[in-house]
Image (cartoon, rainbow, N blue to C red):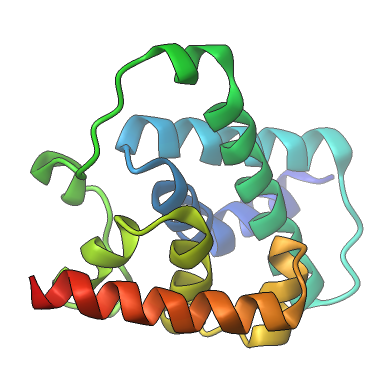
Length: 159
C-alpha cells in the first residue's frame, strides 16, 4: 500500500472509525487505541476493496471486532468500569455537522445490542440490511433491536 493511499484512507475514515470505537468503548483513550489498531491492520493486511460500501464495511467490522476483543480481555474484565460516560470524555466525541446531542449520550448508555443498531441506523444512516451485515445478525433481529432500543431510549429520556 502506498503512503498516499494510506493517508487518503486515514483522512477519509479516521473520524468515522473513532466514533464507532468510542460508541463501543465509551472512553477516549480506548477509542484512540482501537482506531490506531484498525489502521495498523489496514497496513498489515492491505485489503482490496470492491467499492466504497465494502471499504466502509471493512472499517466498521474491524473496529467493532477489535472493541469486542478488548471488552472480552482479562484486563477489561478485572478493571472497574464506569457506567456513565464521564463529562470530560464527551468533549472528545463529536459528530460532524451536529451540535450537542444529549440523545446520543443516552443511546450510548443502552445495552450493546440496542446501542449498535440505533447508532448505525440513526447516526451513520445505515439501512437495516447493512446493519445486519455489519453486525452479523439477521435483519429481523436488527428490526427487533431497533424497536426495543427505541422503547428503552424513550423510557430513559422520560426519567
